[in-house]
Image (cartoon, rainbow, N blue to C red):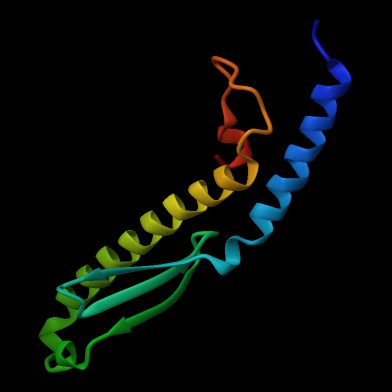
Length: 112
């Protein structure tokens, strides 16, 4: 028999754990590199860029501007991708086992 009260309790616990996991995403960081590490970008679990570091060797000529721009974009994209993956795994690990596996249920709206 279906236990509606038990399911409601699980949903409440899921919401609490999800909120805690989402609140801790600022503490997750990921770094992306480009140009063999000459450009580095660090982002947090909320996919906000925290830092961008450019090696001094890239600043020798104004003509290098396009290359530095391209490497910066590549490093930022790598950092954001890694941070997003870490955030999804973090939220999944904090909410694992709280909801049943229901075919067709999309947990994307929960940030999973």
